[in-house]
Image 1 (cartoon, rainbow, N blue to C red):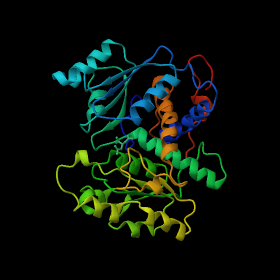
Image 2: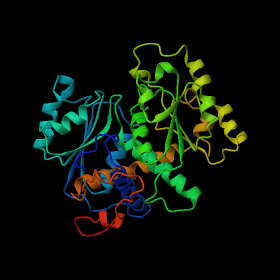
Image 3: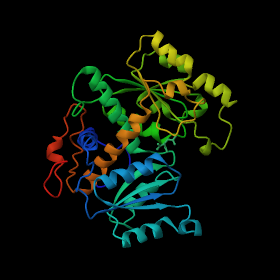
Image 4: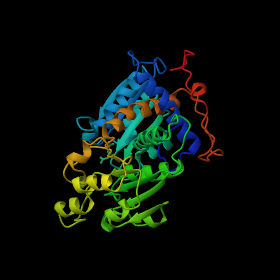
Length: 348
Ligand code: NCD
């Protein structure tokens, strides 16, 4: 695994390795001194061509906890505004000896282009490209789900899959890279994925995805999901009217107070509510739902740092053998203690 570009081509084995190492990184986060020397002397560049709060600071925190040097680059206020190309920006970073480039770009495929271009040697991590993929978001969602699933089962989460879990993803699937990355990753890990949204906000070809599609949220909830992942309505990507009004959208597709109460009525005591953030409170999710004990929103943010530490560590430690043959969910990932040896010979 030289780069982390998508979850569609991530084997179950590599996904589990990432999640297992993330568990070890989470343990480091519990310590008083939350820092490891693993990436000392390495340089991680955050190359953000699109707005971001949590993903950018999460990658920054992850790199710093691994003792890497971090350079933050935002397109706004840089030479990109003067017309500089991705190639020239990349080569500038190469000249500064970047070891990893974390890139967010409005164009789907930009990270893959960077990885395949030969412009740079660095490992490329996709932090969200257009409407295509957002692999580390899906990994942190899977990590959060796996912890929940294992807790219900009374087993440790490291090594387990999501087999038997039913996850419902709701809303603006059309514009959502989070939904795409989650569909691929969660199914790879053995979960059953359900999608619900208005037909105008579901992509053409969704019928070929490995999930069941519902055009009515309450019908989908009647399937008794173990987790409901609400998507943000991505108004900035909409160039047409996809629904009559925000009021109608929130009534038909929002996780509102009525649907929150419905989970109790249905006896779905262990069903969690997820959202990648940023949330439009009162539109796709009500404040009561977002702040309820069922909400995993803040756990997702917390877990994001551990998952990104694992990704940077595995990509940069040179200890990330790919094994595409071995991609069955039931195959246990390598023992994290074998994977997580730092260059100094210490385990996190
Ligand atoms: C997501 C994104 O940027 O794709 N947010 C995030 O990374 N936390 C989802 C979104 O913007 O709705």
